Image 1 (tube, rainbow, N blue to C red):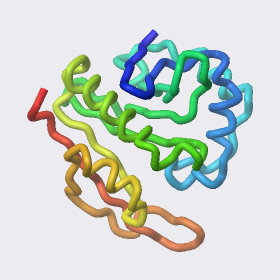
Image 2 (image 1 turned 90 degrees about the horizontal axis):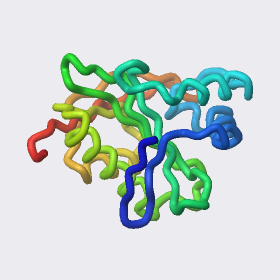
Image 3 (image 1 turned 180 degrees about the horizontal axis):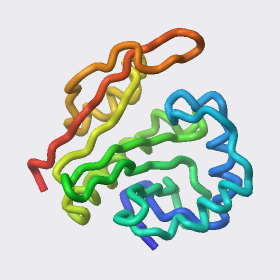
Image 4 (image 1 turned 90 degrees about the vertical axis):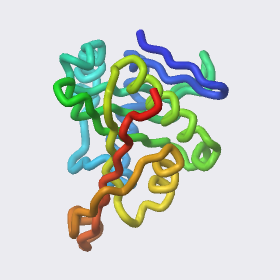
Length: 177
């Protein structure tokens, strides 16, 4: 099991007892626009996903980790590496803190820092990228804090509430690890 510990949080592999948390997150329509979800998920599908969560990142091409505050505390968010490309040593990054009460408390910053370090030191990735809606000021601030740079904007990329919105791609090239 992967566990990455920080000062105030830790990241861990998904467990079977995360079923209700993942189910709630995947079915929360208020976050579908950032997770690129279009339809609800059944508990059956989430259970199947969790049963396969043990797959190695090289096999699954993704890694989803739960963000937790202490050993007995349930997950409060998820952070992902997706589109893992070992040939070109890159992956996409996504992060979501479910409950607004846990946002703006540096939890996302610590989680992203842990994931960046893991990606560059242990997976030997050369670059990470994030797709961020241009109106998502919190995510832009989080990623630029860690050196991600906006390298382009995809015009009218996402249809949100009947309006096409731009999406920027942010990139971090490993020059320090």
